[in-house]
Length: 302
Image (cartoon, rainbow, N blue to C red):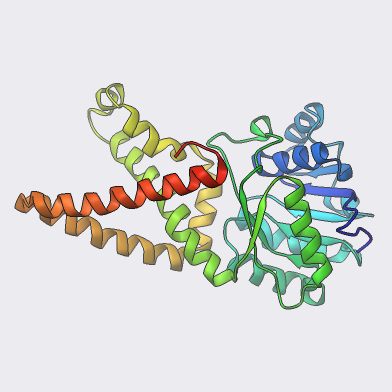
């Protein structure tokens, strides 16, 4: 690796998938002054031109051309595309170029990397920034999206320490706080606190939308519906891929949630107000404590 963490500077960073996540990373690195040239790679020439016009990237190129002399390649496309992308870049991956990703699932991308990259898998450092918005596309990119946010690194046994340190330093330059987990632990945690909430939010909106009086219900929907369903406006393609990629852990969480919901249903049917209040109180206390701790740590609203 040509760059050192003590004097962090990536001469050429390639962003594959210049949408909200990739675009925000590009803006963050530019703002931090740790990147020379940012090259965008993507499926849509129009989207890449928009990213260039907005100053998110400096130029657009094919994957093969972008990899020439690249210091770092960041895969920010939907997770189902990772194997094809890794397979496509492998013949052009030069020694010293670090590859990382920003996907919400890790076991699948690690398997894809080991299969597609072979002996070059040591150059791939898996990562996941815990940040986002309900808006999609490069127009939604923010230079401060990662400030105060967590990033999970899931290093491989094959990774060089210097490469892992460089990826960590890149995210820290973007303002993030990095943590290390195993891929299995990562996927279990985020099936519970990220993937399941998105599925539930999509499901509630779908239930209302399918009702005969959907328009009337939506007309009277208030803050509770708005807050609970905000994430249902997220990218359908991205969340489709996440659900499939992490299906085992997610299905386990759905089953557990179904059991809790069945318990609530039984209490409501029985008119057991005391039991409902006990469950609601415990949940309310947990949410308030979590919100207060989060607000104190990040200086945000609970």
